[in-house]
Length: 309
Image (cartoon, rainbow, N blue to C red; front, side, top):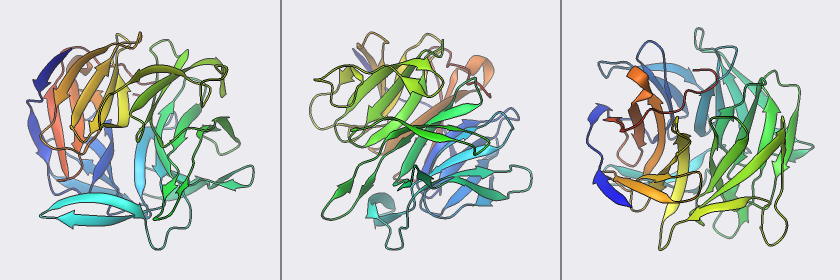
């Protein structure tokens, strides 16, 4: 396994815990600011433009087939900030559940699509990826309190708001989610276990399940040793899975077979997300959330083009 330092350009700073980067055709990057409850556009010259005030805690974001931005809203965090470095420490005092929101990028209007599934509230929607069938997979991280953790699920929903279903359960802090290049495999990262799982997709919204002793029906791809935490992800065109990694901050690159190929070290511990854009999708846009930065880095291989990219 090779280890290198991320070498790139800081495109923006002063963001309030950025996440969910989306590379746009015009060269701008959309990010959510979890701490401000905002969807923000970062222009190529670094100017920041507010797209929408969505409230709560916007966590993951993706473009839908209708051109709107779909947001996983975790319902809000409480925060600790030391010397300009911020981190979430639990549910917000006014937390009232999570949701899936849709933002019109032209008007900035915000619509709530889902707050429940079969009568059960969404606790902390986190990351999202669209398939080629007009639906999307998303993780629900759950929610942390001082004395308990509310478990989340892996969900599948339609972008028109017509249906939502649980696809997998018993995941412990599910965070990142991504699709293989052929669309037949779904990858999910767990934060607190630092494990990467995969599921075969048998039909839209349906997953093959491993028997016990898999705790969640997934097949283990890789689990990092020591004290590490996994966040969100993006895939390369080759099928490699690039997972933002916390504590020893950076991007861990795994092969589909489960080998840890590379680690790209970030300048801070809260390296939370990655997307690909630019020429040949060989620029990685990485959120460094603790200090509120968006970093652009030349990547050694092309990223995977998303279904609505």
